[in-house]
Image 1 (cartoon, one colour):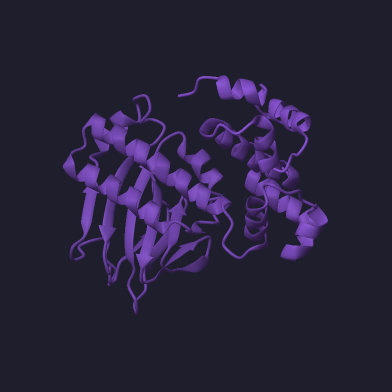
Image 2 (image 1 turned 30 degrees about the vertical axis):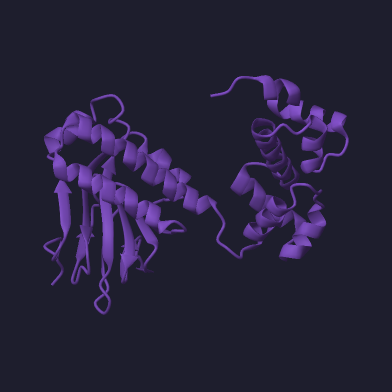
Length: 287
């Protein structure tokens, strides 16, 4: 028989719904508010079926064991380091594996900004799972939410957990955008990072990672918002800023360190990126 809760050593916090409605009428928390949060270790027989969906968006992070989630008639196995994110109103079911029950951290959220945050993580009514590269970061944030709500549900506490939930959902979006290790994109990015003082030839780079130049360019546009050469230039400019801020190296030497032997060319590129010459940037007060 499936259980919604009641697991040994579980943690569970539910914000009274009148307080949720009040939070949704206030600045900031109307954008995102946590309504429920918890931790279910080795949750044998855990399961929920919601044919009409839930009012809240449900976020579950599996840290051990296994389970499953079903949306749009499709059941997907869920293992450790996987997040389930089910948008509000989407009919669904989920549960723990009978053989190896999952351990999960979870929370429910509502608010006007939640749909946009889900879009950034590429979550939809038919795509509700994410493989996490930084599961420990997500679980730390969920632990912080649960600990906060265990204390009280004051407006200040709900405001604090709103900020943590924002960080959680943006972390999920980052995990989607960052390439998995060993993929052509991750190998290309590492190559550029290790050769900031050199130049890049896109056809050679694409051949090295085993994809066509056009496909590699598409991968870079999705991950960085720009092209391959533009990303390499951004890496060069980031190192140049760091050297100007933290060393007394001459501007010409900074240029050489980022692969631009002509100091005039380096100064032109730096000015185009930062709106000022390297010397002016170094003299500009920061912080």
